[in-house]
Image 1 (cartoon, rainbow, N blue to C red):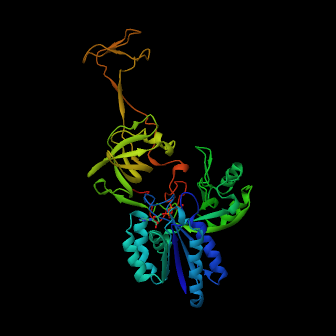
Image 2: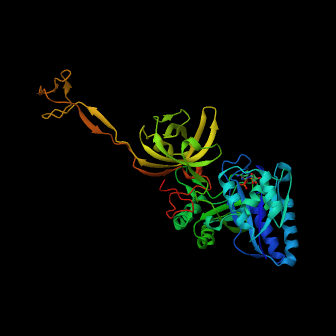
Image 3: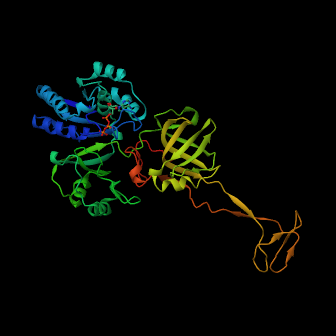
Length: 429
Ligand code: ATP
């Protein structure tokens, strides 16, 4: 029989990672006779979810299991979660197994969990009526991610991540990877892998900064290059093992296209509108401006960590047509859209009016008086008919897409370097 076992909420800020728990559970399930029906899935859910620990990751193990051993496999997965989850520090794990036939019933839940907040009660009902088995601990919140991951639409799982795990003795210690080798790996495989290195900030991006079992993660659009990419890295500590996951990372799946009247907090939206205020740069280097459409207006923010992207935003002016991509937050002043991407659709033509140049000596002439023409102070040339000249301002910006620096990019956001479209591509917005 084909089963999809979703697992979520095993970690705390102090330790663990749900991908590691899933990878260990997978190995143990295989030792009991289960076969992989696919790579394990790493499913990113709503990046604005207030309950997330870090990147709101959930996992699913697609397995082919003989009905006679399913009970043993299920018990082993739950035991692995019990053993490894950081239960003392607030993890509320959930595990739920679904059949191939019931998966279509979960597709709506999956998309809602990526784009909205989902109520636990509704997920409990889904598990009650459709799960083969489910188990949860504490507040049971992990069942939301577990069921959503098991319901992931396969056409949205278009990227991969190789996750390499550290030996237990190294958990919490500095990660020993040579940054030069990461740049080399990026040079060799940067076409098929992404977000390896932040050249703006001169920072390795394949290693997390948390005390979790993950040593590194290489994200890619092509599964074949992953092990070769890993082999280029100079790693000065032992690996426990590595696992390749299929993911919905870098797909833009979290965005919904909205007008400003209908944006809601905790959503990620794409809004098409016009710049309605001049950008304001704060002393901390954050940039704010207003964008409006026919239904309303919103403050748009490019915070300091978004890097050089802020200076693009700071060059916008009232009347520019844009599509803004980002997450909606409630602030005391009202709703704010934290920018993740920007599509400059049409730059307003901006002109300045200047005194005309002297045709003889090219110096700027001076006005003689209203409608009385201009006079050159250097050579004395007078033109009683001369008027101001209009000059188009170079905006220092071209129409097109812009994105935040790699360090500030959320897992679901599709890097512009990935040319082919994701399942929820909004490039035409
Ligand atoms: P990591 O990325 O390090 O694995 P995390 O950021 O995934 O950690 P979790 O510890 O899994 O964080 O906690 C997220 C919790 O929020 C889980 O219990 C999950 O079920 C729940 N959750 C995820 N998405 C939603 C959503 N859209 N609505 C409601 N709850 C959600």
